[in-house]
Length: 428
Image (spheres, rainbow, N blue to C red):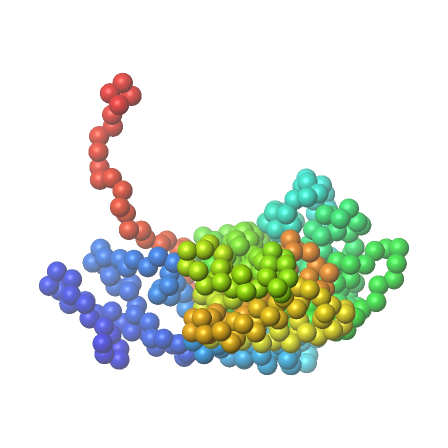
């Protein structure tokens, strides 16, 4: 392979495929010229296929690196806040003070949802999964905010992005309150993004609610750590839906649907449920043995990652946050936390897990942290969707603003029947 192209032979004809050189990451062979020769690539799971060009997020899984617009996730989690990260993802640069003030003002001005949206909730059973409700309600937003659906208008895209970021906490809290039969609360724009979300989740009109700064900061970090993660399944779904020209609310609803899968957004819920199943520290050796047995279907949830072959950089931040929250709410000595710490110790010391790089990931710690905050497991993925909305809409904006963007159309490797004649029913 040369530095600029790679050549392959197709029926005696040499075809040059350009090699693209990214600012970070692996060189990428541009396979588009193959289509002219009626030849396509086969890559199940898209493990070696770049479906887009992007400037938003970079992941180096081997070295445990996650960058948003070039900034390490550890620095953003320690020094920034969620709305500043939102601005960064949407606009490409950290805001000046005046830009930040204007952006925060725009987001807080859009936190209310149309009053008729409340009636949507009555169409769902009280025990409906919150993600089912979120998919329906977010998709329905396009029926209320159709004044900004021209995807070719940068101002419409900006307004839609701000509306989605602003309204997701309100809708998520409404899902939770509906399941409890409690009054749904209106947002309060004098509070921060994370503070107001926690207030809408846990306060009731009959009592005063006080902000706990440690818990609010933990919630804000959780939002930051889940804001974007490059071309994962849900982000790719948003991009593919958006490539058809679909409105942004419909595209985000599609992303929510993809995120609901237990292999994607449901991983932190699965990790917490696993801890409940193990039950006690005394049962850990038995379950570790099951995890090592290739013939046993049991797997340790919250350990290892498809992308990260090193320690998940988000997990380091989430681990510290988890400890802060547990100290604040007095749960450090809880059975679940002691169990989690024992599993963590084994995963970091046992050669079986170390050699396979099955380190604790962000889902392992976030499930424990969210539970300590008082959030039920069926709301975990909703909060993930809330946080990831800015990543989805940033990726969508990037795609639709590209000159001549076109509809996604993956190819297939067909292995079915060749052409055959129809057989009448009396001859079958």
